[in-house]
Length: 271
Image 1: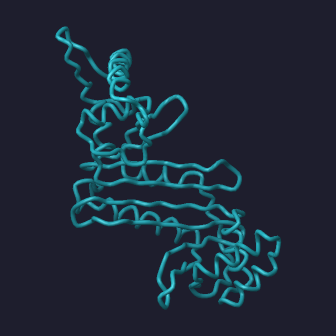
Image 2: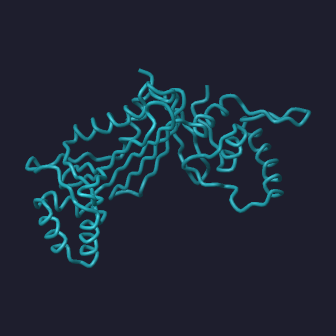
Image 3: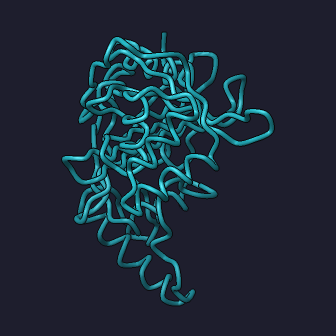
């Protein structure tokens, strides 16, 4: 059984089309702007390329057949019932975007690169959790955290605008007027202007009892770890900030991903 395959963007979408996929979540249309006759010519080249890689066979009668293992990996992605998008904006590194797909208990990671897209099978659910957590520096918070803090989007926009105008003391003042102590104000300001790591996991689930969108967002830096939740507070859009310990952050992430991959649905993890 193949654990990974390497496909160009057009090879990937061509195979997905052969598998009757309506769309390929998270992947740009590599055929955009091409005329029908150009696409037909490209298909012939794609078939030859896939055959050279050992991913398909062309019979003497001209029929084209995909390798079963390659077909299975692409089908998990193209016809998934659970889709995971991970964004890691780490201050010390370049931003990282990771895509995972699940179907019938199988999970595949799509690694986008300049030399092609590598589809990598995740052997276990725990491997998925470990992969998602990689590169995150869980910072232990100061023990003096207050309560949950709710700040409207309007106020956050004002805070960010002042900081971008080189008035960070003004930003801090606004945050403290809206319920922050010095520590939490610093953490929120650092998150808004990119001085803290930002981490987000968004998991749409399609069909079954698990259907919905599961998400987890946090900032992590010297002022601690803060989980972010979008809420409506007194009819205003707002963000709720909750400080977590490193253990709480890791367990919350695991619980959210676990809920999305619950065995209640076809694409869930196997308990």
